[in-house]
Length: 191
Image (cartoon, rainbow, N blue to C red; front, top):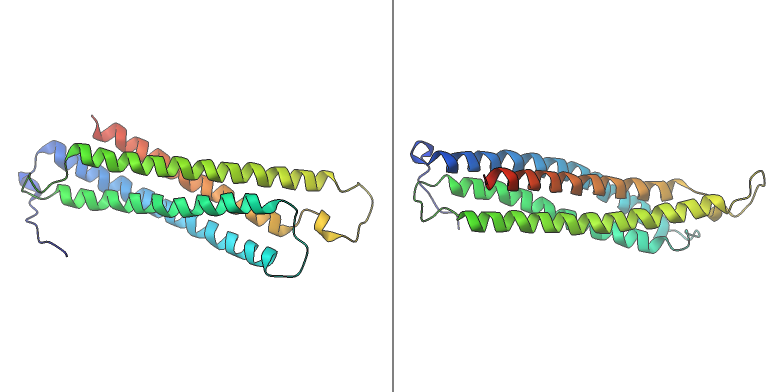
């Protein structure tokens, strides 16, 4: 499936060389930043979900919607990571000396726009999850009377609740990275 192309950067027009360089650099930066933040988020969500749903202990009421939104954000982050990787592949294809084999500018811009949409929708789900989780943690902390010891530990804010909040915050940061890199690409490529 791999095709051998004659790659001769010296014969490429300067705008194609510039666009290829930008796509490669920003694609790699976005890819690795999103990978690191995404892996951290996924691991934290898995740990938190396993401890919430795996054990017989009582879990926080209503936290499922926050976890669902956070998981959807992480899944869409995976798609955003794919688009960052795709930018680097488009950059390689742009270096082909045969202009008919190169991706067209309109096609490249369409891929970049799809990447932007995926990151925006992923960030929306992550923000909805963050809002739900922050509200649940706030209500939980406000419902515990001050100075009274209660044996029902499910009413206290616990580390699992905070793990989910942290995972979701990392997902928001990863999507933000994808959005910034994609907007920067759009601005640089359309010049």
